[in-house]
Structure formats: C-alpha cells, structure tokens
Amino acid sequence: MKKRILIVEDEPAIVDLLRMVLTRENYEVHACQSGREAIAKMKKVMPHLMILDVMLPGLDGASIMRIISEDEVLSSTPVIVSSALLESEEMFKPYPQVKDFCSKPFVLKDFVAKVKRAIGD
Image (tube, one colour):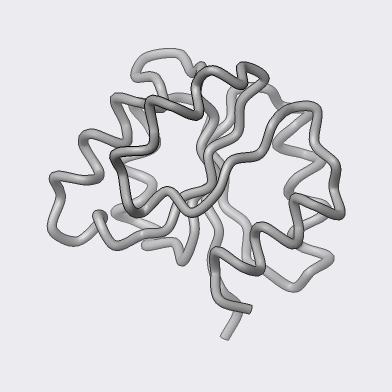
C-alpha cells in the first residue's frame, strides 16, 4: 500500500511540481489549496505526511497546526512546513509533529530526502 501525502499549498505550479516528484517516488498524493479545506481533507485522506505551506488563504499554516495539534486523531500526523520566509520556522517549533522545514524555492533532492525521513522510508 502506498503512503499518502497531503500537500496544502495555494500555488498550483508548486502543487504540480511536488505531485510529480512525490508520485515518481511512489507516494499517493492528495492536495488542497486553502487552509479551510486542509482540515476536512486530512480527515478524509488520513495522510501519512502533510506538506504545509505557511501563507494560505482562509486559515494560515500556523492556525492549521493549532487545530491539528488539538485533534486527537490528526495530532499524530507528521508535518513538513514549507515557506519562502525563513523567520516562519520559529512559530512551528512548539509542535512536535513538525518534522522538518523546506524553504522555497525547493531543492528537490533535499525535499525528497526530508519527506522520506519524515514518513519513515
């Protein structure tokens, strides 16, 4: 069974790129483009890993992390935070489910290595 990854990202080009890279690595990839959609999609897909952008329409990445961390089922989902803002790394330190950070633009080789480490492959 393929491991499921949920990409929460509002830039379609980034979603397409990450989907292509992760599909090639044999993961089942799901995506959504807003913070409000992210929680519902998580509950539906039950991903093994979530790639979470910080700046999103609706709920931002920090708000999503607060909601997830208080949810009994979702709080165990590992997360990789992606952002063009290096300062945003600090606001996610309190969340143990945040396994790594990826700065944009992505270095795809490093990104794949971080995904594999976070998901346990």
